[in-house]
Image (cartoon, rainbow, N blue to C red):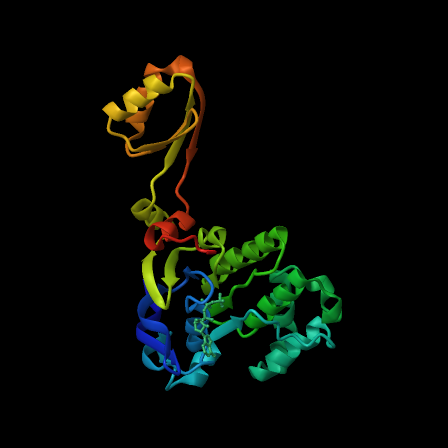
Length: 304
Ligand SMILES: Nc1ncnc2c1ncn2[C@@H]1O[C@H](COP(=O)(O)OP(=O)(O)OP(=O)(O)O)[C@@H](O)[C@H]1O
């Protein structure tokens, strides 16, 4: 697989403060990649530097083989960006906003109309083309921004917390569009988020904290490596259950007559449950989450 983003030993300092500290990673072409971390982890700093908005202190960053310092304009030609703060002109229509962006990217007049139609179709906003941006909801504005960022058919789409502040339904819709885009256009999507559920959609996740990448892998491998599934068992026969758990050396905690058991071997648990079948009142298996990954790595919740 081709690496479309290559970052080596990236450092960004603001004065004496090191916001990003010797970070290296690579992103595969056509994948969805997320930087996951709490506020202040250094996610926006990294994405802004990749997008040529900030200057790095040291290190190397290549996008599609182009150096973000030496080939700024070539990098800008191959990327699309959607940042946290809206940059749409609310006194203009959706179409006018897109046209302005098209002119900025020197899109020929002959294809402008067709491109605008294409990107608005992608985000289901064709009927809103002539509407003033000021009349759109927050979620629709974000969709216009996504459409606008795609107008010049970028190879990499950068999204800095694309769904922050949006309601769950709109967030889900935006994700539908992004996944459709990635599949249909083979576009690479690089996003930052502090939403765990969003990171779950991604092919690869870099978990960031205090300016460093503390884990990097697919969501399922991260969960396999750093979390355990927990079986919550409620039993009338607490003594019997406890004796069996102790005998099998399974790790557990107890609250009332509910036991939280770390699942290592499912067959072992099934055997225990079989022995006290009639006393079991409830059973729930809780899968490890990306928040558990973060908790395991840092001792804190990602929101904390
Ligand atoms: N212009 C700046 N001057 C000084 N410090 C800054 C500046 N911008 C960011 N920082 C600091 O750098 C660190 C990383 O910030 P950054 O915005 O990259 O984090 P983040 O992970 O994107 O967080 P958020 O989700 O809040 O945007 C933070 O401690 C922040 O306060």
